[in-house]
Image (cartoon, rainbow, N blue to C red; front, side, top):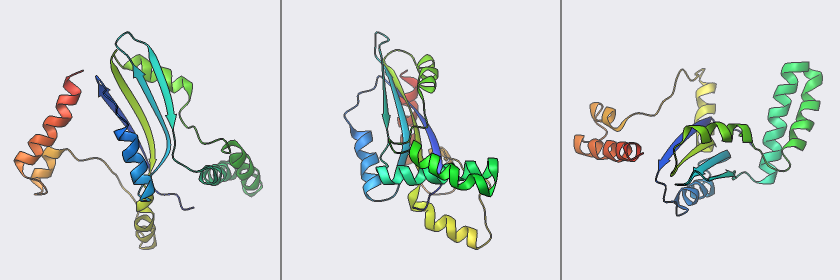
Length: 181
């Protein structure tokens, strides 16, 4: 299993009205082999302040074990050199047999403190599997990533990818969700 670029995305939801659409879309992207959710933590606080926390990952058990093995091998290599590589791989694989949870309960409580009642937050650790061949081609050409960022819809107007009206509508959608909190 080649590991693609990994991204952490933190999302906020005001007055969430979940119908399973986000999880369905993540599963669709997984089925198309575009992304994999390594770990996700969703924290919901209802209008009375009651809290619900849920973990999600769409790695198969074999993928979790393989990823755990690779991460463990890298950690072992960094600590003990060649001798730590094999031990780290074995420990990482064993630790991932029940799935990978990058986000722990302590992080859940940190998120809970930051969100108001009747809202939710989600932390998604996503592997961009679609980018593996591109990343490898860039590396073979001697290239490397200098920076990355999401671009605002309004900035897309300046480079001609969307019209001002389309950008204004995209921006309105993003801002109305944030403002209603």
